[in-house]
Picture 1 (cartoon, rainbow, N blue to C red):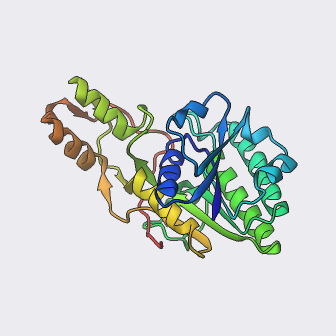
Picture 2: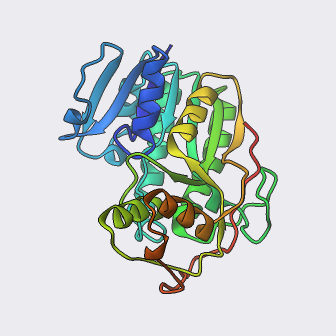
Picture 3: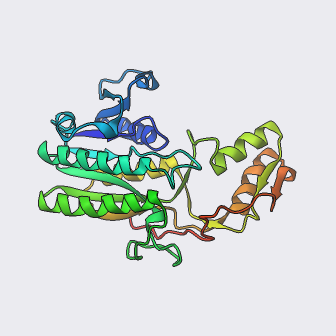
Length: 275
């Protein structure tokens, strides 16, 4: 089996690549030019394809890259913290992803795994199952929903197996330092104060390596449809922060209530696993 992976050097992608190679799966990874050195250790099972901008490539280009590929795991998307929810780059990602799908269909790829988000759901209802109505409130979530709906139809018409993995609150190795868990570790390791909200918000946290393991497991299965990649365990920000701080013996550095909540800030995001 040979799998094509986009977003190979990103937060999730690097773990997906590692999990695939550990299973001796052949991988063709699309990376941005200049990032080839990210994969320092050469692996005969790993083939790198470089591009200036994945989302500006044509359907024919994608068809060429998908030749001989059994399944695609499409992870690449614009995800810069504090900017990605409202950025118009989401539209570029949507258009480019549709071209990737066209190329995959033309190359007769058998299976396609797309990556969605818990923000696609109506977040006023808890917990969030795959039967929860969709109600995206950001451009990021809206373009993800648009892609999910279009791919569901296109792949059904062309007999391509399609899975849509909705990610919840991931943390772990390679996380951007502007994200909560990485920021906590950075500040606590330096012995510096961490300014936080009141900490009462409930989130569904999952280690990125476990999430990537699940994505790979799904890619290698015959599962189809939407799947929640989540823990199903409610954890408040305060609980998580205090747990991490206790490992450093520096709970005194946590300053709750010194930072306002974000505008787009539901007080509870809890998923129902169905993997």
